[in-house]
Amino acid sequence: MSNQTGQLYTPSRILRMAELTRLLGISRSTIYVKINPASKYHDPTFPKPIRLGSASVGWRASAIDEWLMLHTAPAWSEPENKLKELNDDDKTITP
Image (cartoon, rainbow, N blue to C red; front, side, top):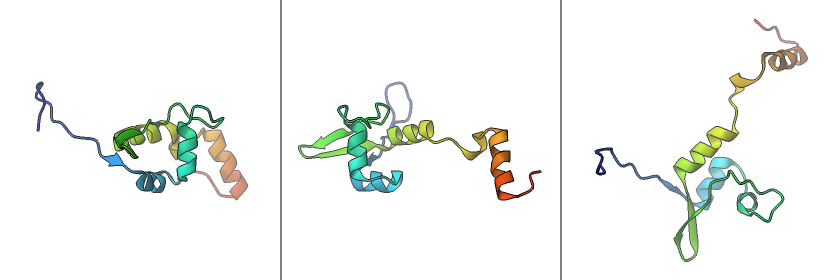
């Protein structure tokens, strides 16, 4: 399927709560705390849920993927001196 500009349209997959908790490794209550502006643990960068029906919500997989990319640093981004400290603590030899 393509839109008027000729670009392919790929719909975002919707994640329901059970799948979201498995993916992120956090509880449903933690997710609700993250999206609650009144909570001291509110995370304004966490993707907002979208209403699917009168009593159901979901999250766009693409929004969750983007949030994960912004909030998880790859291991190779650690400063070299920090990695050396870790290796010294383990008594391993660094190349």
